[in-house]
Length: 286
Image (cartoon, rainbow, N blue to C red; front, side, top):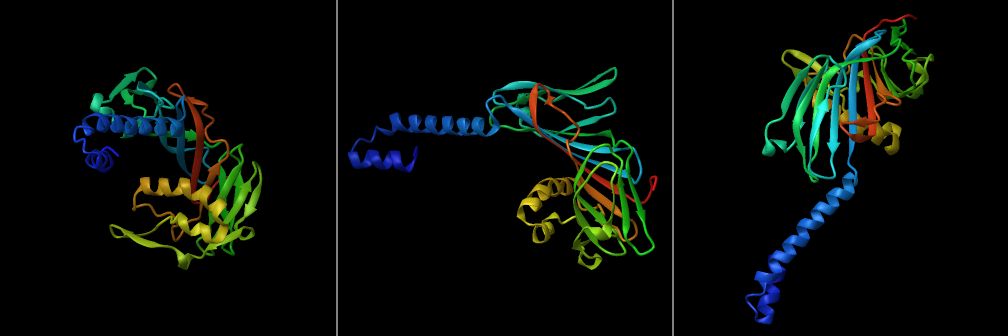
């Protein structure tokens, strides 16, 4: 509108000076529209979203956590993002705040935080954090002589959309596993066989990609969308060197219902808190 339409209108009317008035007005309306759409999409009060992946050995009560924390501010503000735990390591993944100055890492007794993070209404700040998180009594995994895998949930929380990889048989899916419940991989819905894995290379090793998009054909669009939205992002962030479906050890992955329980982060409401897990190998009380 600020270009072709305004000048075409001025030419048709024989008033060549009209663009001096209407071009700034059209540009201002366009800019205001962009800001309003951004505010409507992010919410008038701003919000935060959490996505984390905890990786642990079978039966372990504590695992390494890779957290991604997104902040959507509805107005220009300087943010201070603290680590979720004293051992957390923070890094800025995506922000335009460097236009306002470099983020500062603040080290205090028992805490770490990033300061001088400026979020504008049309920008998103994403902070990555590496640390640890608890898994209650852990997830026990044992392989039977027939190749099937026995999984016991002792995390104290419900698990959803669980995929059990039994390298001698196949990968199967369970809609949920309640706390204290034991399942056998052969009792789930088959997702894919070992021969259907997507192969890749990492140096001299052969690795197998997660390829979450294959879930759609088996589980349907609703369940697949819920899973792929998280796993596709996590696999992309993990790179191409991870062997998601190894040849010789079982793997159990899924989502911990309720996440890590965060309600607010850096003064913003947490509207989504998802905690995904990946348990590798055998171990834990049978």
